[in-house]
Amino acid sequence: MNIADQTFPAVDSANEDRAQAIRDQLRDAIVDRRLAPGTKLSEGEVGTLFDVSRTVARAALQMLSFEGLVRTERNRGAFVANPSPEEARQVFASRRLIEPGIAIAAAGRMTPDHVAAFKAQLDEEGRFIAERGPNARRSEIKASGDFHLLLASVAGNAILQRFMEELVARSSLVIALYGRSGVSSCGHSEHMNILEALENGDSERASALMLHHIDHIEADLDLRVRSGPALRQALES
Amino acid sequence: MNIADQTFPAVDSANEDRAQAIRDQLRDAIVDRRLAPGTKLSEGEVGTLFDVSRTVARAALQMLSFEGLVRTERNRGAFVANPSPEEARQVFASRRLIEPGIAIAAAGRMTPDHVAAFKAQLDEEGRFIAERGPNARRSEIKASGDFHLLLASVAGNAILQRFMEELVARSSLVIALYGRSGVSSCGHSEHMNILEALENGDSERASALMLHHIDHIEADLDLRVRSGPALRQALES
DNA sequence: CCGGAAAAGATTGCATACGATTTTTGCGGG
DNA sequence: CCCGCAAAAATCGTATGCAATCTTTTCCGG
Image (spheres, rainbow over the protein chains, first blue to last red):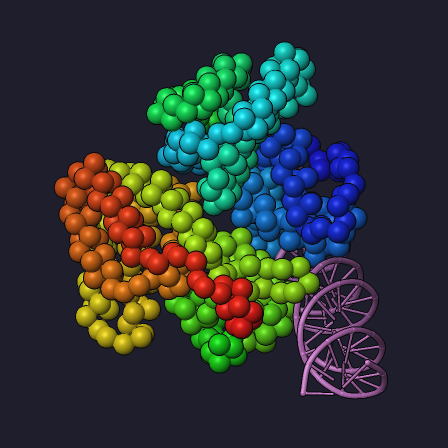
């Protein structure tokens, strides 16, 4: 896949930081798998696509590199990350450590507004699952991640929220790479159960459900090493 | 305090990324409190000091901004972060969530080499506590952070290790800002107890000790809002 | 026909230049 | 003496240029 095959909507909020807007667009494209892992993101190409100079494109790529979504090699360029099974395991180990605590914190801060936001989120999630087609599957992964991000925002800790943004993005990449099948419908019902626990203020239950949920997501991955990872990588880069 | 009052050692590893080297130097200076919170770090000044162009200095500042050690305002510049009490609480809440789990992971992976490294680390820590003077106190805070970083590296999860690097750096800043007195000597003995639990493979005990340790560190802070925070900031910036 | 070295091309690393925005300075009026 | 406003200085945001490095192509000897 070539980056030039895609068109990106124009950056609207010109007043704000343009590099950040480009970062967001690229991140969406990466977690949506519109940009395949290993795809080269050259500064010039990104700059041309978004109609900015290489300086700005470079800043956006640097941000993505911090988040682990892009891997940069000196004098070679930036590539969409291609997480190894080991990296994938570390991503989920981190989530197992952090998200149950986030669920506990969120359970103590739920307001009716939050509940409504969760309901809307879960509705959208259900709609994408009902749909069929490749686009729906991408939206499904994204919506599933958004549930976890919403939870992190309710928890009220900006630092943990940022950590979760990184972890969810990397998880989406991992799921797109190693995911097997439709765990997502199962995930949807788990999300609903978690919300129910949150509504009841049952932090213990929410935490336990979250832990199982993460386990289920990871259990659906096929993290066996591919036959020829070096070969495969050599071919696509 | 003016950044120009300080001299930085020349960047030695010229082969490696220069921006990263500058980032490291600045981070050390910030957590050591050689650069006071609120200090302006203009791109030009940083570039001149390290003998690089603004482009490179800007990249270094961008990295620090991601780590939360520097706050940048559009068209105004970069400033050493001045964490609010609320931010300080979030830093420690994050650590309470993450570090006990890291201790558990580390307990299962301790090798004799690791034990030796911890012993050396604790020796150095003790030496700084014995010394007196303002420099020793800075080194003490830094050494105390290094213990936690060593633990994170033993745990074997690169993602969590990076999170901890950020949290420890921000903690050092918070302690320098809001710390009251010599909790550190107390912290030293707690570090030794944690190491003992790690050596015995007693992950439960290590985890519990770590949680209490973090509580003690935070308990030593004076997080009441200062009388005139706006005024104070106005004066020093 | 194949392997390897050299040249051509592409891409990054970095410095510098210029317009835009903010902050400071200087001055005149109240 | 203080306040408001305009000009000057400082600083940032961004584009562009050049050298260094990497990749690809080409060409030649075996």
